[in-house]
Length: 218
Length: 85
View 1 (cartoon, helix red, strand yellow):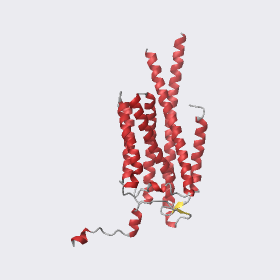
View 2 (cartoon, one colour):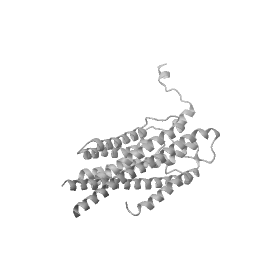
View 3 (spheres, rainbow over the protein chains, first blue to last red):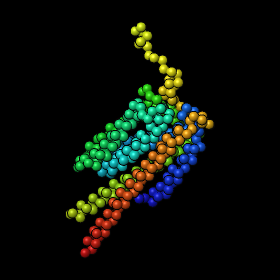
C-alpha cells in the first residue's frame, strides 16, 4: 500500500470516532425528533452507494471499450462497495422509516429503485464469482444498467408521489444540521476511497499471483 | 348516490400531514416527551449496523489481502531460489 494510506486511515478512523459527538451537537428535527439523527449516517451511506454504482458503471464501460483489466479491477472493487453501502442504506432507511413513517418499508419509487440497484450490484458479484471465463464482460454489461439507475434514484423523489424527503431538504438545511451532515459525508467519502484502494490492491495482488503461477507453469 | 360514492373519502388531517412529502427539515431545540426513548433503540441500531458493517468489511479485505500477499512473497522466494540453483 502507498505511504499515505496509513496516515489517511488513522485520520479516517478519528473522523469516524468524532461523528457521534458532532451528531449529538446537532439539533433534533421538529416532526421526527431523535430518530432524525439516523439521517447523518443514512444519507452519506446512500451517496456512497450511488457513487459506487457510478464508478462501477464507468469502469465497466471503459473495460468493455478498451479491454484493459485495470478497469475491470476498478469495476469489481466498486461493485463490492456498492453492495456494502447499499446494504447500509437499505438497513438504516427502514430503521428511520419505522419511527418517522410508521412503517418499515414503502414501495415508493426511490426505495424500490434503490433495492433494484443493490440487487444488480449483488448479481454483478455473483456473476464474477461463479460465471467462469468471460463473465467479466457480461458483468460489465450488467453494471451499465446499475449505473443508468443512479440518476433515476436521485431525481425520483422530485417527480413521483412519495413520502421520502425531497432532494431540496439538503440545500435548505440550517448550518446546525448542515455542518454535521457534511462532516459525515466527508468521513464516508474518505472511508469509501480508502476501502476502494484496499480492494483494488487485492485484485492487483491476485493478478500478480496468477502471473507468477503462469510463469511457473511455463 | 353514484357521485357521493365516487368521491374519495376524506383522510383525517393528521394523516394527510404525515403522508405529505417533506420539503425541508426544521430544527427543534428540545424533544417532546413522547419522542424520547422509543427512537433511541432504532438510532443505536442504525449506527451499530453502519459501524459494525464497515469494520467487518475492512477485516475481510485485510485478511484476503494478507493471504494473497503471503502467497505472492512465498512464490517469489521460490522463484528466486529456483533461479539461483
